[in-house]
Length: 348
Image (cartoon, rainbow, N blue to C red):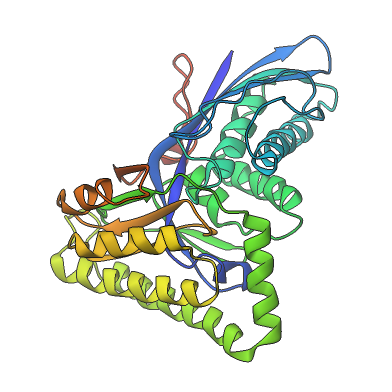
């Protein structure tokens, strides 16, 4: 069997605006999806997917990914999860020039499904890496990121950006602007994540922003303002020492930008009452700043706080299902089987 894992991510800045060519800075975090692949003698695909959310549901199904599992969970989430796995299989077959390859696939994840932490990107990245290696093909992280983007682009009807998949494949903090993707030297920022137990519909939320942007000039200006926030944040990170603990001045400045970013996302209609509640709870817990992360509508917020106060405040907030510290994942996609230790760091 061949096993790969890939990290989830939080957005320091820039979600939604990145879809329109503005820059974004996602950061990989040590919450991973692990995909185990065993080649088959036929062209069938059998999938067992477990623990696709921290505190939600377990999905187990088998047979072709064209058929749906009989489970009592939101159908769009299950269908999307299956679509991502199917697209990863297609990319692996293409990379290995093995169109009839069959697989037994097991997916395990510590990343909430559809909650803004890049669960789909992590599954696709790890799935492509495991499946191609199982077929004797070793892809570098950049190609895995590109193929994973193509898979997400297909599943999301052309509305995906490269941000999630690039961060998951490469690890660390990255900057994405259109097709321009590169690593960012950033210190180990003290992320705290709050989860409301929900999940947003990425396609619907992206379409909502698109409609506002096309209807109102000021909505388009709001998207551009998010890009300006990202650029200001980049300048701050560029001036910081990535080998040292982030200074209080840096955290204070980044936190202020995060607060602005959340306000603009709220104005675009992608926040929710539960996410706003978690954001304000984090700020009341003396976080330097807090914002939703990902598509919004429900799911997760991210805050900056090196102390335990924000996590404690979130844990006592009604509607908060989980709160946890999320360390920066310096390694992206990696092999977890045997002595094969290929990682994005070694290819850097």
